[in-house]
Amino acid sequence: MIQMLITGLICGALLGFVMQRGRFCLTGGFRDMFIAKDNRMFYALLIAICVQSIGVFTLIQLGIIDFTAGNFAWLGVIFGSFVFGIGIVLAGGCATGTWYRAGEGLLGSWIALFAYMVMAAVMKTGVLAPLNTEISSITLPENSIAATFGISNWIFIIALLLITGGLVYRELRKPKIAIPSLKPKRTGLSHLLFEKRWHPFVTAILVGLIALLAWPLSAATGRMFGLGITTPSANILQYLVIGDAALINWGVFLVLGIFIGSFIAAKGSKEFRFRMPDKKTGINSFIGGLLMGFGASLAGGCSIGNGLVMTSMMTWQGWIGLLFIIFGTWTAAYFVYVRPQKRRASQSTTSQQAV
Image (cartoon, rainbow, N blue to C red; front, side):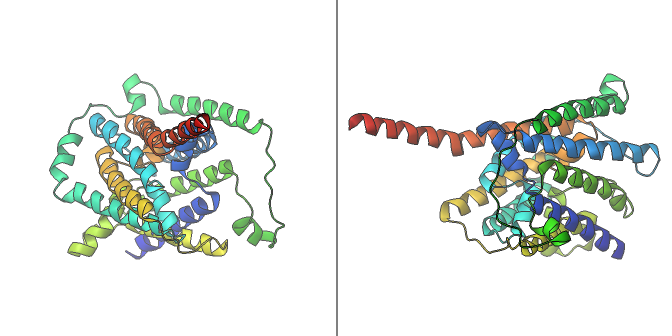
């Protein structure tokens, strides 16, 4: 238990710190792909996937960890990921983003986090567990992309590296936009950690390395997986309700560590403050949290579990899940941001013509 507590908290705290300081927000990244045509955060995600994929398959070949892709619960992944994508827009952050923004003092994220934990628990062991089980039982026999085509995983990893490298190179060659900044108040390590703006690609490398670190640390406690957010979040609430110590695992300390690491980063950078959402934002956060918990449970993972971990393992679950999370995000972004903006623009034009 001591090993589980220490390694889980440390890994989570590193992830929370890096994500908070690097503003590693997949919700905003997927949304900006649609609204602003800005793909940087998506490219950053690809970098993190590449780093983790190379490391994990190296560990597998060395016999340090083991992984089996299992079956592909295609219906749950497709439908659940799409619903999850809608939820993260309403909640203002994905599962991990909600944890680290709660550590910043954003009370809307606390609301979303509570709803997310409740619905995840309901889906896994509550009244909706039979529905979750039934939909998840609709599977295809092969989840591994490499096994489907009968070739090595390294072929897909090399292909992903080449594609990602080309996209990153093209992005870095774009003319840089000068962003005004205040004169630094700190120097040395303090400036680098708590004041200097972090580049999303550098942040992505760090996230990928932490995601890789999670595998052997977790495996040492008997949990053979990497980063995971939904099930540990549900476990916390389940433990508080029924008091079953078996629910406390490495993943629970991981998500608690994310909160702690984010809090440390926010306090150190003087970004921590309690912020109360307005009524509409609070309601959207609650609804978004419910959709997140429902969708992630059906899909077998969130934007981290599927979008970062299972993609790096070259599974259909990961890549198709990521695709439908993005589709869900774009759908919600249209109705939440684009459509109202078009309406306001239309009403403004009509008013000007009337004058």
